[in-house]
Each structure stands twice: as structure tokens, then as C-alpha cells.
Amino acid sequence: MRLRPLLSRLLALVLVLWMSVMSAAPAIASDMTGNYRQDTLTMLEEISIIVNSSEDTPEVADVRAKTRTDINDYVARYRRDAKYKGLRSFTTMQTALNSLAGFYSSYGNRPLSAKLTKRLKQEFRQVEISLKRGL
Image 1 (tube, one colour):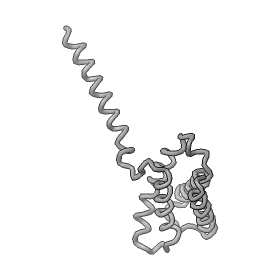
Image 2 (cartoon, rainbow, N blue to C red):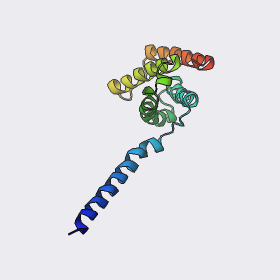
Image 3 (tube, helix red, strand yellow):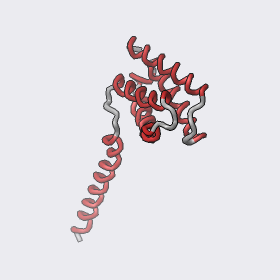
Image 4 (cartoon, one colour):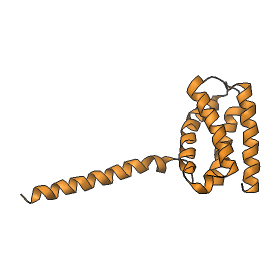
């Protein structure tokens, strides 16, 4: 009879450990390094490929799919950290990412509109300037 509670506790421990490892897997698989400046520049490069390329370029479809997941990873990593969420570069970057994510949610794989492209380029310039200034 004493074996049953022990096995029950052991099974519960194994399940908790397994759940912990599985919940950490997406963070490990992410391309985000934890270095805010580098991650922001990487996101700018990825999105610039989409913004500056024509839709018939073969790499755009691959980059678009990867960017959708990277947007979520980037915002999830830095949004909760008070050290970053008050930075001008982060708030501007988050605005640009929200615009792009909203476009993808609404219009799927359609080409970016000229108005959105112009706005994203302007916001990217602001982010780069803010990063250079340390803001």
C-alpha cells in the first residue's frame, strides 16, 4: 500500500518536469539572442527584406513565414521587461511590428500597400536612430 503514494508522487514529478521542458522549448528554439540591440537589428533586416523586395522574389515567402513567428518572439521577450518597454526604439519598433502583423492578419499574403511600406520605412529609420543614440 505504501508503494502506490510513492508512484503517484513520482509520476507527478515526472509530469511537472516534462511540462517545464516542453514550455521552455519555444524559447530555446527562438532566434532571439537576448541582446536587445542585436535582436532589434535582426528584426529590422528581416522586415526590410519584405518591405524592399518585390513579391515575385523567391526569398520573400520564406522570410514572411519566419517573420510572423519572430514578431511574436520579439515582442514577447521585450514587452514585459521595464528596461526595454520604455525605450523609444522599442515603442516605435512595436508600432511597426503591430502594423505588419495586423496587415498579415487582415490580408494574408497580399503585397504590402505603398502607404504601409512608406510608414514602415520611416519607423525603421526612427528605430535605427534611437538605437544609435541609446534610446
